[in-house]
Image (cartoon, rainbow, N blue to C red; front, side, top):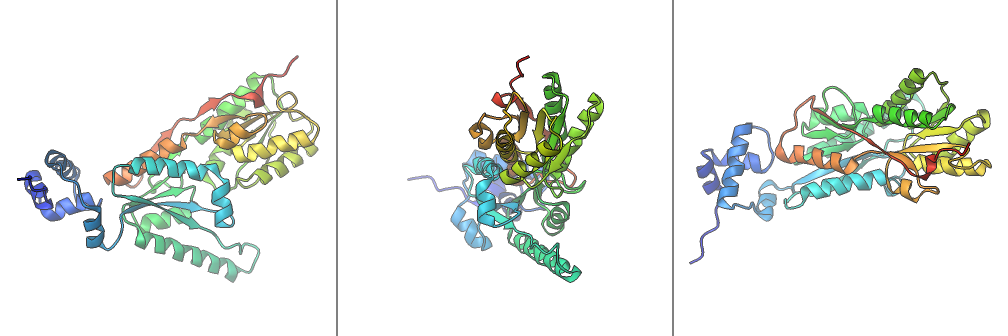
Length: 349
């Protein structure tokens, strides 16, 4: 006779806890201490107990999922499809969920463009965005990974649904896994200075982005230490914004010999603007991006960039959610790495 499959009752008996405690651990719900969670997981492993995805979904009425929340600046399809960052986040989350019964869902927040309207229109747009956040929070199960969500929205998620991890710094309360953005740009400026560049400009990302703000801070710290003048412009994380910002800078500051850019996609536009001005990359103007995305490899010439370990960060965030180890104020910082390619070849003297 074949041996009967172990049940949740068997797991509870082996772990020395109640059935409800086992259920809380399996469903990643609060109310179970660390030792209890460890005892349940050990009992499940010893018994070879594998929770039934179908049974758990029927019991709860909801499919267990990790929600990846993207704050988009424009039409959802165009924004998500054109930014390599989001595909890298999804790759990391999906990797961490392999072997589990947890799915991944993408939730897009698209703010209403009412900033130029009346005060009532702005307030109404804000209320609509909060309503969407609340809807996502109510339907969430395992937890949510926030991708560059503004502080006010991240705090709202934290209030409504505690199991959230942000991939960008938002507040002291919201659990965060971030890259060393400031240190990365500081390194980029130092590297360019070491190549003999003395008119190093920066093209920053949107003010609503914590990553962009930190990268701007790194640039300002570096030029202050090196005694350089600030030359900067900015835009959204889009190729066309990089192109337009570079065009403005090269027109008003023709002495520029290097540009540090807030992301690879913008940097690709910067290279196009430099070439259109009759200059060459890297001999007239060196360019460094940030991310090390597919945009860096496909640019012409390929971009020197600061590698942001997006996939690894997403894996870490997802595992925190799966383990139920998310605590307010948690913070982990991943280092970034300079990846040298053809866009910063030293000029020939």
